[in-house]
Length: 266
Image 1: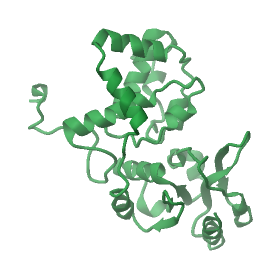
Image 2: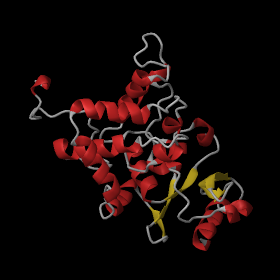
Image 3: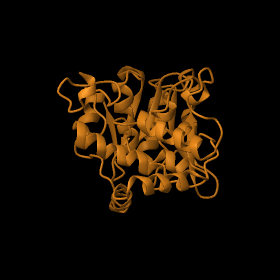
Image 4: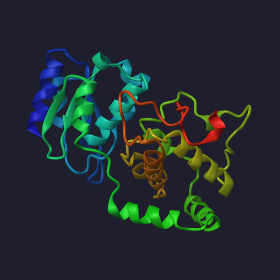
């Protein structure tokens, strides 16, 4: 993508940014995140259908912040994550340059977070048919069968937390699972511990998930944990009218309305 390389080169040569976060060649015909600080290295940037990692995960990392102002290569899932991070006051508009990449692989430089939100209004989250079918199948199960389904699916988990590390919205410096006084979530990777961890994480992402599938792509065991967050996306939309990131809407677990149908909040 020559246009991307040229733009990144200009940004670094003019010192408009000090690092470009993008995609580069990895091993086994895969791509990986690369952090370019020299204009001459911009030739290493690539972009194609293999570039699925959500690079927004690096925007909150102290190691990256120390490199200086970044420019970030941002396909649709990354753009959604940037808007959500901005809504949660984790990134500031003047602290980065967003190099958007459209589904048609065209480069778009956004001058504001509001411009990104406007662009995303025509690229709303849509759950793919194959996932929709599975989610509906799971929801149609009796509660006991549904519980058994997830216990079985989560059984291979050995608590590597790759899903957490890959998610741009899991930016807490210390996670609940790392607290042991009190210990809310079991550390052991047994059926109950695995269920507690993944359900807790899905709940924390309620109304915040940007449907990038980074958690699923990072899982070494191929556990379909993205089905939990996809289902939560739908549940939040149906019950609270919020679907996808927004600069001016609070997430489901940090706000309530007096007219919400659940009476316990009154």
